Amino acid sequence: MTPNPYAGRLIHFEGIDASGKSRNFIRVKNFISAFHKEQYQKTFFTKEPDVDHPSGKEIYDLLQGKHPTVNIANLHPFEIQSMYFRNRIWHYRTKVISNLAKEFNVVSDRGVASICFGVSSPVEFKPLMGIQEQAFLGADVPFIWPDAIFIYDVPAEVARERMLKEGKVRDAFEKDLDFQMRVRENYLAFAKVYPNCYVIDGSGQPEDIFVKTKEILAPILGLST
Image 1 (cartoon, helix red, strand yellow):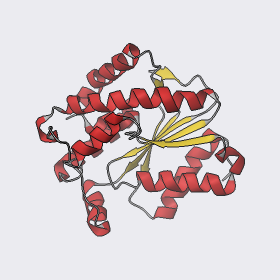
Image 2: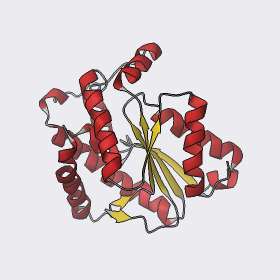
Image 3: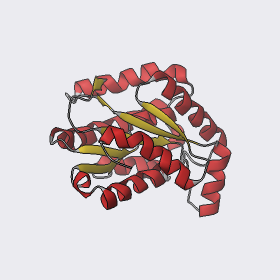
């Protein structure tokens, strides 16, 4: 991994599904748009997997059981993550690095910490991260590490209740409660191993969670709260 060499900051929002990750990503976007218009013009908001590349659509088709030939249940987790790596390499090359090079901040809904979905335990972080780094190296794309990774933490049972309450159609990762519990533990372990991670309790009141997000994000992006 390479520390970010650019003036623009790279921020990732992470967490298990229904942790509040995407909600706070959107709130940050709206906050900067409303109160920091000049900064907003220099911030690129994005998402992984990126469906502008065919690999992104293929990933979502797999998750939603719509792939014409492949069942996700028949794939090893590392095989699935290799698809994410291919998409991430394209995303970094075409959108992340190009915007950082223009001194834009890049804020992404999901990113490198999503490998937490692809391991059965934290023991597998190192080999899977090594595979990802080699993939970036082979593609001649710098594997730039985020300046901040926000990890929203909620018990899997709370996330399940939120999805049921919202009537959300759950994908392959969201249907298995034991899987979600394991991914949550992986995220907490990831935050202890890798730099620039900030774990935020996502089970409280939405406004309190966003206040905590702003407290951490503001100095990184040079914003007033």
